[in-house]
Image 1 (cartoon, rainbow, N blue to C red):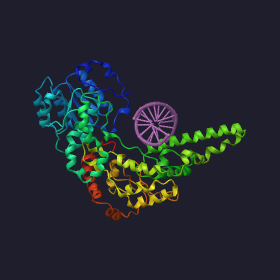
Image 2 (image 1 turned 90 degrees about the vertical axis):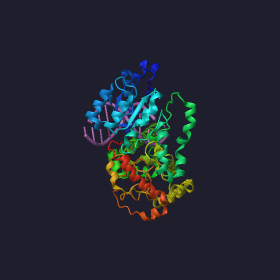
Image 3 (image 1 turned 180 degrees about the vertical axis):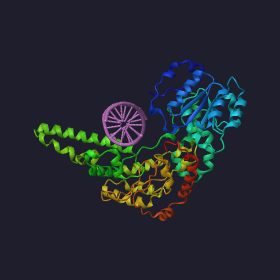
Image 4 (image 1 turned 135 degrees about the horizontal axis):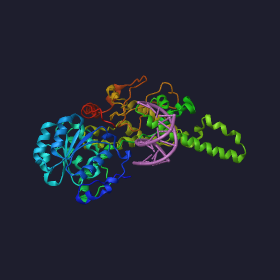
Length: 466
DNA sequence: TGTCCAATAT
DNA sequence: AATATTGGAC
């Protein structure tokens, strides 16, 4: 199940077991989708292994076993390729000749691999990244990031799994990150850990050593606000008509995806069923089988502890957690994602709202709503389809229809970071100016940065996840 | 094609 | 436990 380590070393190469590893889609990163890598590798077995490894992450692969083939492919269809991965010592061409040629033909990022001997030379000649054999999965996991930097100068970076961090840290520091130190300290442990780990882990297989938080997008948290909307939608649609798509529409929450609803719905139905069963048993036991019916069409969910529970403290905590933990760590390659922002809102929310009484919570919401950074203003982003890339918090659209339903002002969607800003559907009287003045420059900076980043990073239509 | 949903993965 | 993802049925 687990994607096995793939290796180039001689021992490993002979072990066919690597080739029999089952690759499931769960292993694949959606970020890698649509990215085609030209793999140039003289050893067929290596080629096979690497291809498989790449594909496991969702990359598309084009292969070549000779330098000449590679050049040919590059010549013919460079536009279909997003990245070149190339063995440094190909039999049919001098190593520096080939990188020189490739570099001259194309500006695609080059990832080289082999032993340490050629590393400096290749980096100097323009390789974006140098991987040491044996290559492990983490080496390859985030290659997609390189493809988003076409327009930038190629940063020299090197070696092994940590290479992403190593090479790119500088850039980060210089640009965006600088303004927002506090945040990074929360999220960006990886930079500091780097050196320590390097010493200890050296060559040991780094299992799932995910410093690369990068790929993980925070889970949606079904806050009570969200859940209430969900319930309300079901109430309106009726139990039978309540399908994910419609529920989604009725909930009218920006950034919420159908999958989110589906998943929640599944859980919801389970809970319904559980309760139904329970009641049935009770009835049977009590010899009142006829009463069983009521539950089906009714709103029995309200009696279910899981789904009824109106308010809990957890919501606030979750929101906050999502914020602080969310991948500011994107630092690996892009500058942009370091922008996670901290708002006075959240600080404010954090402390007081933890009371056990529900009413208190209600009161805290209005606060958030106007302190909140709320919306992303650029409508452009909607065009990104499902993958918005905002670091800007999103808030619930205030459903005009349901505003009476226990909703007290806008709520922030838990996993704001990579959520798309859907066009706002309802009147949104935002005191934007107020917001901006409340929030220090950081936010403004962040917004600007966001724009920059949008161009650099998000322009790519293949961008799948953010 | 897209939606839905049960099963399964994380 | 909660949420996300997958793959098959429609």
